[in-house]
Amino acid sequence: MKIISDIQELRAQLRGQNRASFVPTMGNLHEGHLSLMRLARQYGDPVVASIFVNRLQFGPGEDFDSYPRTMDADIAKLEKEGVYVLFAPHEKDLYPEPQEYRINPPQQLGDILEGEFRPGFFIGVCTVVMKLFSCVQPSVSIFGKKDYQQLMIIRQMVQQFALPMQIIPAETIRADDGLALSSRNSYLSQNERAEAPQLRMTLEVLRQEILSLGPSDPKQLLALEKKAKEALIARGWKPDYIAIRQQKDLLIPSAIDSTPLVILAAAKLGKTRLIDNLEV
Ligand code: PAF
Image 1 (spheres, helix red, strand yellow):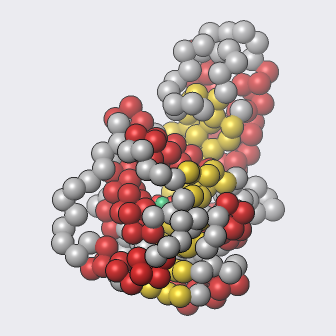
Image 2 (tube, rainbow, N blue to C red):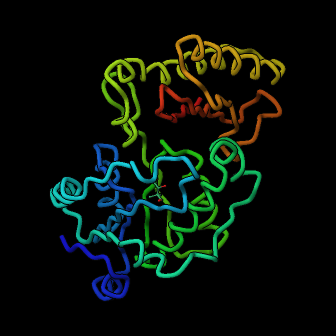
């Protein structure tokens, strides 16, 4: 595997490749990321991965400095997965000067849910992803459904900017007890780790409740969201949101009909903020 930090060198290495399949990451790779690499291999060749902890998407007081950086272990994992190039730019490679041009996703999608609780997060994500796409020029890129809103925003960005590439969604990988794999799980204490699957369980209960609703007023969904939130609070969690939304645009459903729904949640357990979602 070639490990490249310089953009010109990356372009030279990938010259003539028009089927590259790309997986952007922030490193600290776990089985969830590796499943993305495997999916990438099915959709293109060569597989290119990136590792870059993107300062632009962290708010003040968030974990940019303490975000786990495990480059040597990550390289060994990517080698094993047969990744052809690892693009691992330093900050001065990707942002040699202050990044003043930024991609601003539409408010109705970028400022809700994660965007409401992490202002500017999706501007940071879209800006770096656009820049990484411009460096790698892949024909396909893989994004996990764990970050459901991110996946949707990137898909629409690619569509609206007519980028000649396809975004492929990948299913969330979970531990045996149901906890969605995430680099931030490493922040959990032993007790918190034992409690953490409750987030997924709460979403599962909520899903069953939604499915058992007959034709009814969508206001009932609000009552179910509230109940789920209270259940987590009673166990010591601090939920930012538990929201039942339409899969197609993440808006609040105006009717309970055949519109596919998704439940999205973010909650703090101790100091660790976990997110998860479940399609209904
Ligand atoms: O999902 C992530 O790990 C990051 O948001 C991404 C897409 C690599 C951009 O920094």
